[in-house]
Length: 150
Image 1: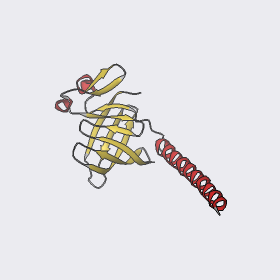
Image 2: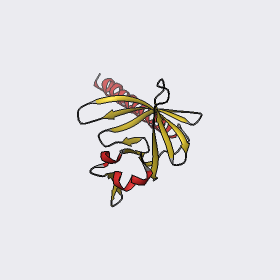
Image 3: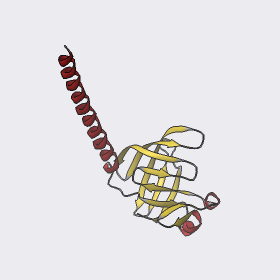
Image 4: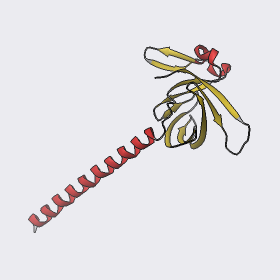
């Protein structure tokens, strides 16, 4: 009887390990799909005024971040793979879709006080120029210029 339980438990453990491995593989594949879902390279720092990049961002060693008073100069954001960093929020892109030069994204974002899912769209206007557009609100857009890439 003990031997039968031991064999049954051993088989159950192997099955759990196999299922856990399968689940991990599925997660890795899904994450890989998200990161390559669009061909447009949006990596780097983006500011609302190209001439003020050095006032919006600072570099310390190999790390780039926001200057202390960056919001005074219009602000911006940093794209690093699936991560988007803003002055007051950090986001992880969970879904992307590119359609005729417009990249639609859904991101899980966190601020100091709350978590939320944010949907936003970026219209590619050139290698170093994009516009954040607001579908459903005609004519409303924010222009951003790339300050650096990778």
